[in-house]
Amino acid sequence: MKKFTELVAEAAERVNEIFPWDLEEILEDRDVMILDVREPYEFDALSIKGAINVPRGILETACEYDYEDTVPELVQARDREIIVVCRSGNRSIFACDVMQQMGYTNVVSLKTGMRGWFDYEQPMVDKDGNEVPEDVAEEYFSPVMRPEQLSSFYKDK
Image (cartoon, rainbow, N blue to C red):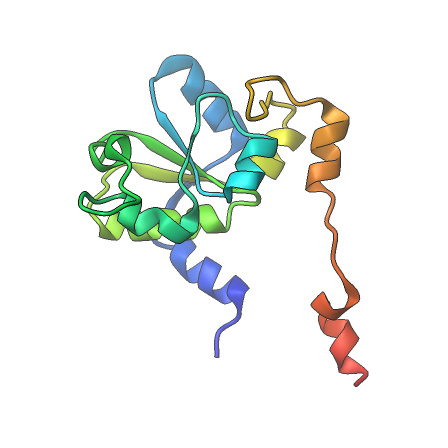
């Protein structure tokens, strides 16, 4: 049995990653697609301006025609430079890995994800295009875990 972190590490060996400061530079120089693979409620709360949202759960069908989830702009972007983002940089690694298998030639994952983008003090917008205040973003990125979600909760049982 493999743990989540092991699966991420294996996929990361097949995927190129960039840091937030690299993305900042890229956005100044080039027209790239920012693909956010978080869930819609996450995307609505905060995102990188101009990003498109295709949740990880429907990515494969969004990348091909003839599905209800098809995103034509994404289907037609197989050779376009695509930066894939998520909350922490894990889902984006899986997304890049599968997209490469589906023929995408220029996809990279944002290492550290939106959390790293926030830590690097880069702007984020909400679903209406308004800049997200720092305190709102800080609350969004604060982990909220119930005791039963922690392995230590079960070690004593």
